[in-house]
Length: 223
Image 1: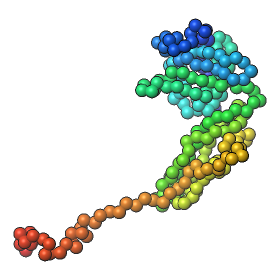
Image 2 (image 1 turned 180 degrees about the horizontal axis):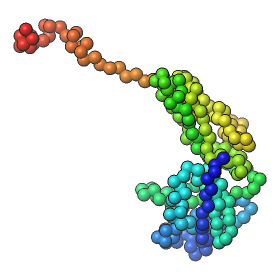
Image 3 (image 1 turned 30 degrees about the vertical axis):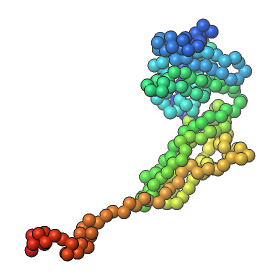
């Protein structure tokens, strides 16, 4: 579990502060429009301080962590579900948060970290570690939400393959795909054989050239 704590301060948006025009005005005031939805409450439209949000977004754990958002003195527990960024400049333009209900499971995509690559026998023998996922969707109670999942590849030999079912999960956490009736225990990482490119031996080719193919002027020079 993460030891990070993310707390954001937001302001409530009235109906007059909604819409494209209002959103542009908010951004000019260094505020990012957002919404908190879900649970047993009505959606709450809010605005976040841009600098505070940008700082939080620097942490990977922000995307897989239960957040505390204070709105007019009331604290909402939520997780981030969608983030819209400017297509060219990358700054946040809108955020969707899903409200947390205690005792109710949530679906979240959490990062997968592969560790031990340099110690793997396959790596030492020239193999190439190929990772096929960067995150997976898990189901768990909010209190059990892992910041990330760790996969130890330090024992992998060339030709070895790890699948979703090989991920060691925290207690109370399951992988959504493996819970589905038609789910697939797909490959998440493999150790591929080294790729060897043929190297041309110019010296050997030169030795194979017949003397008759060398211009007479060059043969004289060699003599």
